Image 1 (cartoon, rainbow, N blue to C red):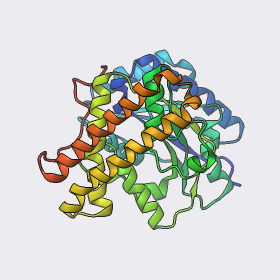
Image 2: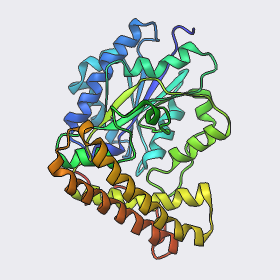
Image 3: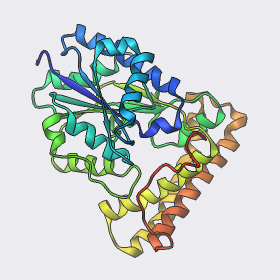
Length: 331
């Protein structure tokens, strides 16, 4: 067992454009409580927290003042640093934060998650128990409070909070809730491509190919509901484009195979939406009279994703770096 492990928490703020500051502040308050709990369990006190902004350096001071004034408890529990990557994208922000750390362990967290009690200690526990532990993957699930968010929780790629352990035990890498040995992570920074959420799949593939032992402790965090029809439509479209990128990078660069894959995948997703909503609706409290509309939304989502995947595979559209468009933010 390794006492007094040092750790840093990296929080990118790419998702902060799509949620109210109060929800972000809730995350910070929870972190303050959990850092205090970790300190009592002999984890190193006063960890570093790196906030990484996709903004100019001039924004750092105002952001830090906002965090300190609204979350004074956390300011007593951790050392804050604000990094700026002008026009930086999701994985670029994470890479900048990772490179700035100096501790034994790097915890990766997003601005739109709400950790459950014990999350931080559970996420760090494998490194304390095993000296050669490299990766600890938490479990993120979608929070839900209305019929649309409940439907989305059922057909989204995150597992359900109360899903069976078999599904949760096989969950892939979600970089909004994970931790790594810093030395290993510095040698495996996220490769940057046009995708919105592609690089976590590539890193997970590297972990599997290297035979890395993957720890999956009960470190649960709820992801804030995805709000707004504009955001949902854009998220469906970018999901499809990312699927083509993943297929090309991981499976095959063959144009014909890429063109055929959206049809096969769409059929699979339509079937999955139907089965999950019908059989698991009670896990999220979805009334039976909302089942038809929930299925319709799920099919619409994956139809749009499949269409965008097909367009990119055929060359109807050209690949370009993905950003959350201004017409989507705060929608």
